Image (cartoon, rainbow, N blue to C red):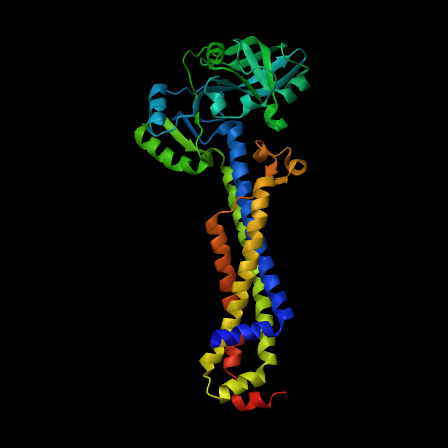
Length: 402
């Protein structure tokens, strides 16, 4: 009986009920779409940043520090490689990194030299996939650099550059290399600061035979923490340090946390507005139906019954709005997942979107269910005060109300 009464009362004023439902549904729609875009944005930020250079996980010598000019090669690299294979991390690359000065005639630039394994590195980072001229480390005594850096130095494929660095003994190392290829990641700051050559060339140039300063492993970012924990149990801490991307890139982690906090504030604001809308609608409903509630009370309906009736009407509005908002939000997310939003104009120089400039929605079922639950809870809470007010009406005064 109460359900029939509630349905009839909701349908009694279709314009007001419809506007209330649309307002709630719009709030839910925004929540679903914003959350899906946020998840997609975070995925693009993580994948794009890790694909540039850092990868999901790194292994270094125990006393390694990235800002030191002195080489800190790892001991027993084979043990680290075996440990990675043991935990299922098959895509990893060996690196020898050092700061250097690159000279081309009267021009020069400070860069990070990275000697990499040409066979393994393409499975870890995207540089090999972004070649625009020449070849990726296919010929000995050649380097690969960013197209932006080559333009700054007036170089092209086949040109000669001189590298100056500090070798493994702390002595200066100077040698000429030929430009074998150019890459363009889409992030000029990265392209201007990194030069690659083969690991054997790097070891020879830095007089560090067999030296490796870094092993970078590629895996799903959400699995990096668990795999790092396993590696720390296998590898001796006095010989190796294992760091996940969250430790290597704390600024990226903090930016994601900031986005999550901002999204939480946005959700609170949207649903505060939705709640006030529902409370206002139900207050108007109670005000217009004083005499009706008086009749119900006069024929024996208990205050709790009147409270339950008003609450049921509020919940019905929430349920209908949840259905409408969920369907609309799901449809929008499916569209945005397939077509995305081209953000090239806004993020072309952003390191977090080097891999792709297209923002795609990624809707998780848990987020959809949570959004619907929050909407229903908001409708329920917003109906409490109007229902309490209706339950406190005195039958005689309510019947006399005009």
